[in-house]
Amino acid sequence: MLRNLSAEPKGGGRRGICLAAVLLPGLLVAGLSYGDQKVSLWERMCEACHDGKTVLNGKVVIDKRRIKEKYRTIDDLVKGVTCQGAPCMNILKHDKKLVGEVGEEIGIPESRPQ
Ligand code: HEC
Picture 1 (cartoon, rainbow, N blue to C red):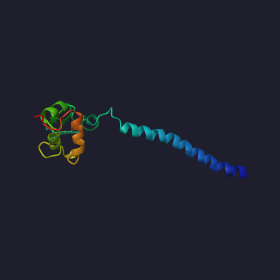
Picture 2: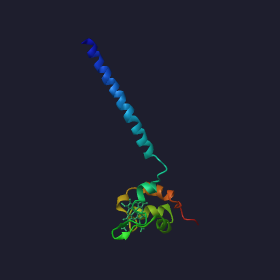
Picture 3: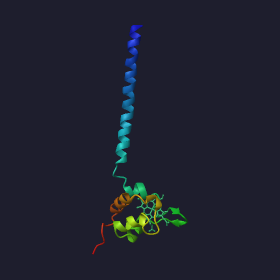
């Protein structure tokens, strides 16, 4: 009887460790893939719509190449996306930092070459 009682918490403890062993690698993998630089911000945040094939509001959404042609500087891009010029993207209105980072990533210069 006594032996049974003392065996129980021990078993419970081991189950706890097993759970941690299963959960921990999962969390690590999730964390790593979130910061994975191989998937660029552009691909993660913009390409789904701006791939030159997606049609929204009855038009093909502008693709990366045309965005780079139309917006010559990061500033232009941020203005274009954050509704200081038309057309714009309401969903990204408050995300200037993200848009700036994406612009940098796809190779739009910080300022106009003189
Ligand atoms: C959910 C789909 C979707 C996603 C995701 C998205 N966009 Fe857009 N974007 C649109 C649509 C639709 C328009 C066109 C708005 C209009 O014409 O009224 C647009 C317009 C734009 C424009 C202006 C286009 C022009 O003709 O000048 C820019 C610049 C732009 N998006 C950049 C981005 C960037 C940068 C990202 C990623 C951070 C992004 N978009 C993510 C759907 C999307």
